[in-house]
Image (cartoon, rainbow, N blue to C red):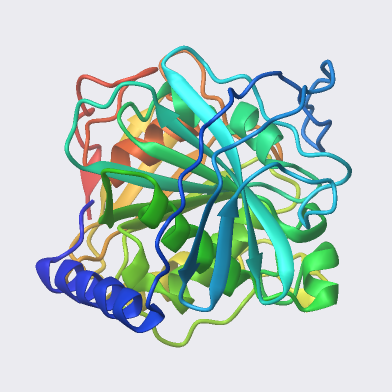
Length: 369
């Protein structure tokens, strides 16, 4: 699900132009003392408590990214994003993690970044993952399971203000305070591309769950050229989008999610005083925005169906992934049915989707209509 050549070139020019205008300061590199400790912050979707983290020290890197000052340093409880001190999950074998703090529009923010310890590819994709409301980056690492499927990639988990995102007409502290989360996520992306060696500006992907999925939709409309693919899990847009360049889009919804309305035939739900768009209507809207034709290809698994609209404008594609049953939680799949993270990464990277882990074959299409 790569970008068209014109989008890649445009993106490269935009990045280069931004850096020239920003006149970045020289980076001052200091020694690193190790990252240690493990803790998980309780989240709304069942994160388990764990021992308190030990103190973490990081390399200090200061530079200018557009209008945002970025520093990788000792995390502080005063940083906007979560409650109390920052926690860093112990990474799985083959990965390293660290916290990066930054100031965006006068607010102290942070993100968690995970990177393979051994790099075997000259060009690393970047996957930015947005947590749900009342979740932390540490909880999202565990809930999403991306580190077990992405392989050679840098995975980034930004922290929303008050464990929420200003996705449009909701949600939480981020919305009530009017924080500009579009600017924050853009600053995170630029920081990662500037400080993580080998990352590619043409291979930046965005995925979000619940409130984070709503924010992903807002980013897909506000800055589509920045991403090679965008995915929303158990979420629909809570902001209007009247025009957007084609960007590969993935919607993942469970039929048992009580917070979503899948079909236009169902009674719509309300959120923050607004009528929530149905998944069906949202897919229609994005097919129009992407310039997609009506023909689809559907693939079936025991408890999940993937419907794809691929005949779209240059660089465009829309995919609807429906899990049977479930609830408002990250879909983990089951026997013969891949997890949400496997599906997302497979669609992003144009890889066959199969049961568990790295798939080996895509099922034969059920229908083309």
